[in-house]
Amino acid sequence: MRAYERFLNYIQYDTASDANSHTCPSTEKQLVLGRALADEMRAMGIADARIDEHGYVYGSIPANTEGLPAIGLISHMDVVDCVPSAPMNASIIENYDGGPVTLKNGLVLDPAVFPEVAGARGKRLIVTDGNTSLGADDKAGVSEIMTACERLLSDPTLKHGKICIGFTPDEEIGRGANLFDVQGFGADFAYTVDGGVVGDINYENFNAAAGMVTVHGRSVHPGSAKNIMVNASVVAMEFASMLPPQERPEHTEGREGFYHLVDMKGQEDLATLQYIIRDHDRAKFESRKARFAAIADYLNGKYGPGTVEVAIRDSYFNMRQIIEGRMDIVQRALDAYRAVGVEPLISPIRGGTDGATLTFKGLPCPNIGTGGMNFHGRFECIAVEDMDKMTDMLVRLVTE
Image 1 (cartoon, helix red, strand yellow):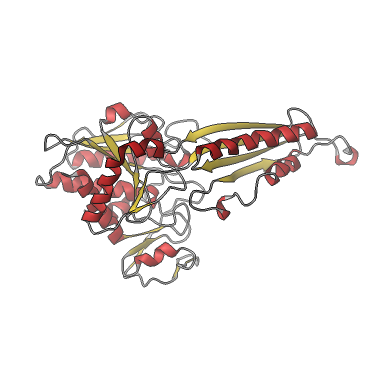
Image 2 (tube, rainbow, N blue to C red; image 1 turned 90 degrees about the vertical axis):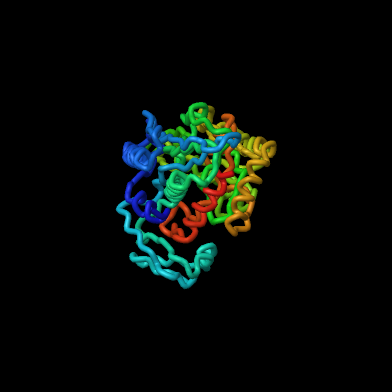
């Protein structure tokens, strides 16, 4: 079976995670796909395939050659919930001409806006109907790993050490590696297959934190509000206005950090702002968090103690400081790309992966591409041939 065939099956499973849930996995529907993957792994000959009580799927292919490292391949099963993820109505554009594509609901996938898409010219391009995300982040990675495993199991001439497979829940809400069993996984090092275009390799990511701003107002009748009312929603907007507008995602690139408002709610007596805070540079990252506290102090001085509360929670850190001591792992990926005719591109991730957390847990884990494009939206797409190429690359990555 080819990777795209598995992919078209897996994306029919709605696996959106939920940041407001306190369970793991955050949604029961992730378990449905997890159980199906474990069953499929056992059917192809991965005898120890299993899903644990938290929704993590594990399995391994025993080594057929002594003296080779145990290598892990990891992808996540969940998708974002910021756009609808079901019902899924994907289609394949045969021999894509490189121009704008009108999706079934009238939205236009335009290479002028999404330039990476033009690279799929002449290929079979999988797109949505415009009403949902596609789920290539990261069911493309799951599909490619599963297909690579099938090939390894069917061809004993491919010499390899132990291959460790892991599929995680809740990566999209920053919890994918929280309960990952690193010791039980058994790999010497690993790769998350969770990147973008073919050729991608990343070992540098954002330092990340979540920021919650809670504003306590004083609500009174507007007819007698003078010098008494403190409108929590207005104070919340004032907080937002004190963050540099040029340091938002829509105005940054490369290693430039940002503050991103992801949710806001408010009335006169209570308002909340939820942010994510990102920066590749650790010192700048700490400064960004400190800015939140400084703004809160200023507003509390203006409106009264306790008006504004700030809670900051670190999510993950930049793996570069650790991976730089294991550049042999990166070189292995570079060599595997070149072996299948792809010139690799090392770039910093403007985001994070399970691999960042796993690296700090003792499992060095850079990130490699899947072929997917335009993640987290209705214009998400992937080429059939790019999934084949990434499957080839994974096979080369783990073999002698």
